[in-house]
Image 1 (cartoon, one colour):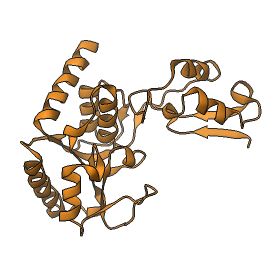
Image 2 (cartoon, rainbow, N blue to C red):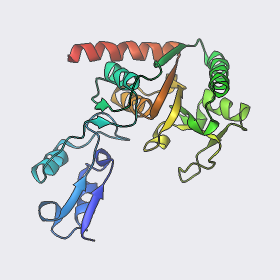
Image 3 (tube, rainbow, N blue to C red):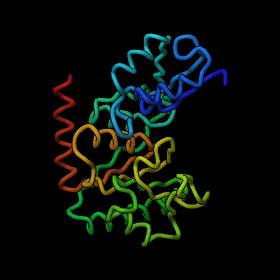
Length: 239
């Protein structure tokens, strides 16, 4: 082929992957035609981008920063910036959206009950099922996500084995990573007590928060509350 176009490039900035990609391009990295789109924040899947690979990409390209966020409201953009110190651009959504919700829950049973009530409330407000996504740290293996799918099969479906939306009339319940590249008007983040520690947990939280276009609601268990406090402290220390 004549041109290589890579999206989610942060996941491909590894030596073996770069060699595979550019080995198929006439002229390679230095002399071929290619376009590389990547997230400069935390949205990698497994391991952070390799610094030497990033250096090679930068040295063989002209970089352009895309700073208009055409997905999320100002409230969601501000929440991501506050907790994760991540620059997701300037929201281009007109007006103001819904305040990002942080809902304290005591345990999985309490989280299930509260989440079910919140889902039914947004449906009563006129939101359609296919505008709702429940994303969990462990997907359907998580206690809350698994229970919600069993309780509300008339409203939600899982993604297919290939990661595709199976029904145009149902909402989605799946893991945070499985929903990357997709978006939903209303996003509930659940089972957040199962987030891994460190930068991988921050990355998953970033992905989940940035999937919402209008309403973002987080279920805050005691463990996740501690996680958030650490994030806020780190964010202030970086400033």
